[in-house]
Amino acid sequence: MADRYANMQEDGDAEAVEECIQVDETDENFLDIIDNFDGMSDEDDEDVSFVSMGGDNEEDDTFDMIVGALEDIMMDDEFQQMQADFAAQHCNHFEATDENKLIYTEIFSKYTELIEGYLDTRLKQNLETFSMPAFMEMLMTREEEMKASDVFDVLVSCADFETFKELMLAHKTERDGGGVQLCVDVRALTVHVDEQEDG
Image 1 (cartoon, rainbow, N blue to C red):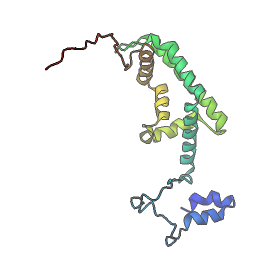
Image 2: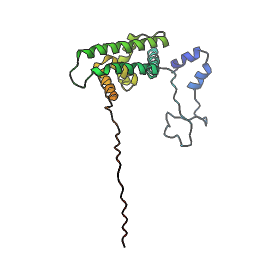
Image 3: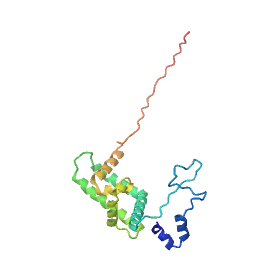
Image 4: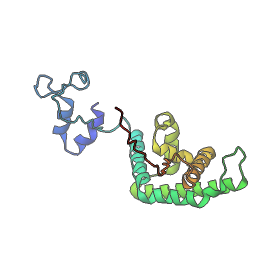
């Protein structure tokens, strides 16, 4: 654990390191959320934050930094618009059949080149030492933990034709209004009032 905080010590923040490592459990303000998380009362209105001080190795830290940068890029309006514009321009060629036309391959190649080129350029702007081949190698060793992330979905859409085809078909369906819709039928009705009284 001491290795994890070596960077803080080198930066002259030795007091913070000692404070992180040595916790006095007899202190009345100490809340042991690891062993007693369920024991927190409703009176504890404060938010609980978990802070990562870095991984156990440099590769994990580098990977996490790249994934964070990728998430920022993919949430950017410019990236979203670029992806939507490409889909709008090419989705009309796609049909929801098992047969794949030759033009699909050409469009898939253009999409892969566009997305990978954009991500590579932006990542190199944000991270000086970024290397796409090295990142892809790291990604392959962490495939299971990344499967639920949006980053993985976008990267797979560049490498997997079927995922790309589904993306194009989904855009086409949305554009053509084929998604789930609410339809309201409004008609004029005549209301009759019964004027007869029983009695």
